[in-house]
Length: 252
Image (cartoon, rainbow, N blue to C red; front, side, top):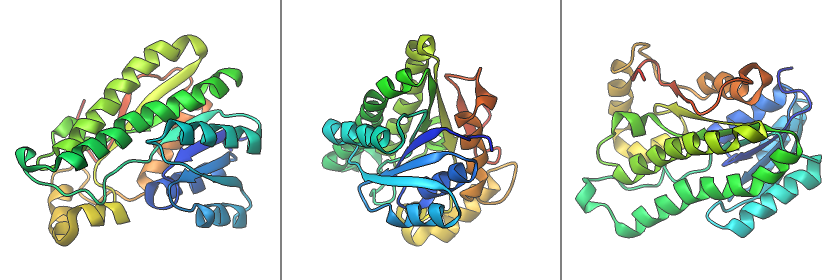
């Protein structure tokens, strides 16, 4: 059990990657506080049915008040916070296009959630992490940020900012024994990715796989090992890094 006795807060945990992280981390012994704008009841039910420990809360990461309520809820449920996984983001429902044609309201919404939201969840959880004697913040970035994905500049810019924030926070929080790392996956086979590519999904899957050293599509279980590693004491001397989980699409 790599995460025995650790308390993990995961945003965007109602479905897809967030739910996969929650279930995998609970299987490694963590007590999971699953949060989302949507209900996480199914995530909690799956964890408890498997013998794990979980509770849920509602969070809108664009609201600092909501983020603070999330952190308070995790501490009330489990007494502490050891790990924060910043998974929630706007992605699946975004409308792509050339950068000059992107909708301004969508741009603002992406920045408010994908950048400001990560900052706010970290603000809300940092004092409980300090009180716990340190811990791990794991920010979910994207291959899009380092590859320079076309026709989605709002999303690309937001995930590039996540990488920058990860590096800056790692330097600020090292003295508190809080490690901050990012994970940058390629397109994962989830509902959100299907929503993002829409009718072009089948073609996108082929193109993405052909651009990788490992020529198959990324599934949720391909990411959970990296997340568990960064949450665990096995990565106790790792901070400020962006971990590419992309089948060899991009080498840093």
